[in-house]
Length: 71
Image 1 (cartoon, rainbow, N blue to C red):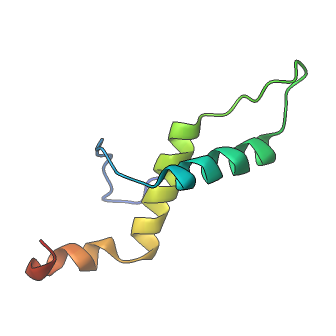
Image 2 (cartoon, rainbow, N blue to C red; image 1 turned 90 degrees about the vertical axis):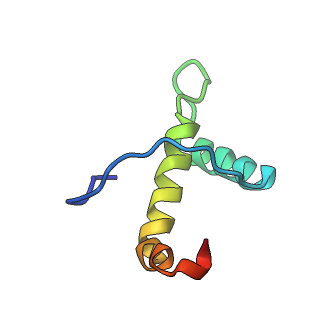
């Protein structure tokens, strides 16, 4: 995912359901496929980061944090 103007990278701990992580791993493995040795070469952590970032952008996280009652 390309960084939009004015975006920064923040390293945080995020709690997600174990089933969500399992789904991400399954889907990324399915998309990537096996290499010539039969192994999957995917970075699941990068994909989790990408998915969460895209979700926050598409669901107006900026608008959410503007409201003090969300704190």
